[in-house]
Each structure stands twice: as structure tokens, then as C-alpha cells.
Length: 199
Image 1 (cartoon, rainbow, N blue to C red):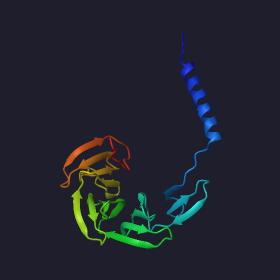
Image 2 (image 1 turned 90 degrees about the vertical axis):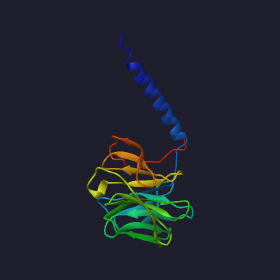
Image 3 (image 1 turned 90 degrees about the horizontal axis):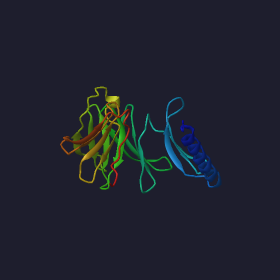
Image 4 (image 1 turned 120 degrees about the horizontal axis):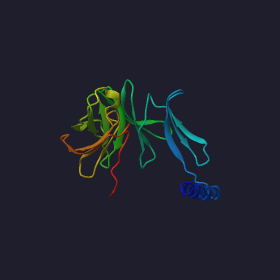
């Protein structure tokens, strides 16, 4: 006796029930994202109905950003030059750090007001003060030689270590302040970002 259609039917009924609930109470959120490719590179904010309420044009490719508590947006930009910018919702630049490396595409504003950026070529995490001074450089190990995919994003953990997503290599690594690997997970395709969960 073949019972394989039964689970499919139950899954379909469950899907129909969820669909009915979704129609009664549609989920609505504001959304902020980067768009690049065919058209101009831009950051868009959509309201809950999908209407564009804010648009910002970065100087070049940008893929990682952070909305700060004051409402400003911090993002990394590639190209020449490359670095990190903080802009207001009126599009005014309030902070800019230009890196000397070939490309920066990841960043994070730290609790102490400094900014952590993911430099590629050489692959390293660089902490920069609000005045633009380099506070610490942590080397990051990767087997990927082409700088564009060496590291996508970095986060500073509560223990002071760095958690890095190595896109081209398909690895996520935690390193100490000297760059020694203390934890890693490999075999991922296109590791763009990784965040440590509270547990």
C-alpha cells in the first residue's frame, strides 16, 4: 500500500489554511535595501504599502548597511575610492572613512562609537575611531586570492573576537585579536554575513 500522497495533501491543506490567515491579516513592514545591477546603484526605503519613501545613491557598489539609533545609515562602498559612509535621511554625509585597500564591502558601528570594516586585499578587520584613526587591525585568514570575495562582513563579538564571513571561500570564522582562528564553519556557498546568536 502506497501512502505517499497523504503527507502531500496535509501539507497542501496546511498551506491553504495559512494562506487564508495571511489574507485576513496581511503582514506589512517598512523595508530598506540596496539595489544594484542593471539600473543605478541605490538604497531604497519602502513604506508598509510598498511605496518608495527614501532613496539614496551610494558612490559605487554597496551591499552591507546598518541603520543607526539616530536614524542615520552606515554603509560600506566599493570602487575607487572605497570606504565607509554615514549619511542622514536627508542624504547629508556626516562621516566618511576612505580606505587604502582595493575594496571594502562590510562594516559595523560598534557600541563604543568606533566603526569596524572588512578590508579586502589584504584581508583584515580594521577598527576605526570616530575621528578616522585606525585603532586596531586584525588579520583574517582566507584561501581566496582575488580580493573581491575575500571577506564580505565582520562583527565584533562581546569577547572582543571578530566573526567574519568569507564569501569566496565559503567559510565563517571567529578569530581572536591576533587573527588566530578559534572557531570556524566551512563548506558554505557564498557566505555573505554571519551573526552570533545569544545562545
